[in-house]
Image (cartoon, rainbow, N blue to C red; front, side):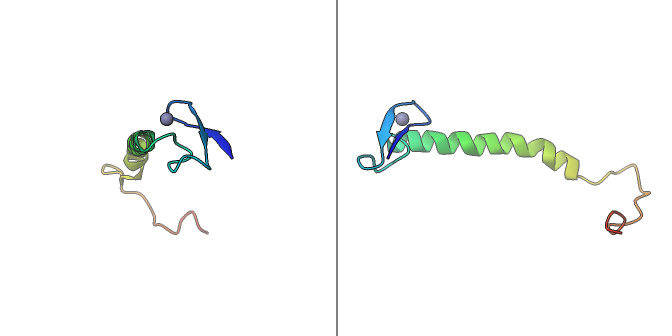
Amino acid sequence: MKHRCPICKKPTDSANDSDFPFCSARCRLIDLANWSSERYVVSEPVFEEDEPDESGSDAAGPHESER
Ligand SMILES: [Zn+2]
């Protein structure tokens, strides 16, 4: 099965490359680093939304939207 390294776009082969779909262990590590840093950035606004509102205390309860 042929593929392309998502990092450097070099053609890779699952039969020859032990780091498939990456061309090398180095590209695999780069992708891992990219992915985790991307995830960290994305989760920031989500975390902000999850924070309880300090100034507003008129929330009836967690069951309000379930009924
Ligand atoms: Zn590569």
